[in-house]
Image 1 (cartoon, one colour):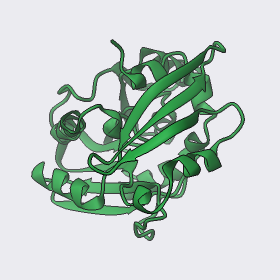
Image 2 (image 1 turned 90 degrees about the horizontal axis):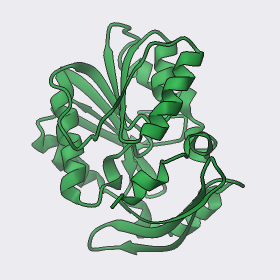
Image 3 (image 1 turned 135 degrees about the vertical axis):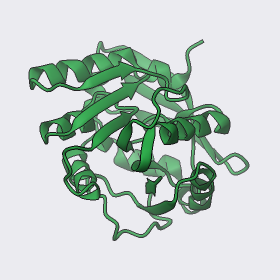
Length: 253
């Protein structure tokens, strides 16, 4: 049986690219470049690359990028977009829970919940971090965003998602946040690229900063910095607060 996130991304590339949360690509890539000192020799892995928006933007700027994703449908769109712009990007179908590379990349990015908090168990989410660490060269850097567990303690996830919704985008209902597991369960409703309506029982794991720090320390990352993640405007000046729906994590091996 397919998991909700597998079903979600089938035939959803065009609609996905018009979602509110995918509109910050340029600013996010500006931040990524700055974090690696604009060094074009750095090899980059984009985990859960989806339709390739960050991979494509970074390749345009002259970086060597590999993108991996679980969805053949999303990758097809990524490859098409790259080909249209004559960009050479190695897009591969991969499950981030399975080991894929070893000591190969200088930088890894995993943005916009590219796999990590979507898995059905904490162990599976941890496997994604484990494999990311494994694929990174010594002194490599790992930049990712994930859901901020402090947010649901002070706010309604349902109200926040409703406030972000635009016509034609995904909608969410029947949200329940479980304090024992820090998972938000909801019914996600989308219309795919072919016009089919889908109603999916989804659940996503929210993490508090101390958990992320502990998980990454257990994987021998030397420095771990956590900030608030502002769409399209990542900055080391934004300390994480209870107002941030997402957190930005920067870890160095």
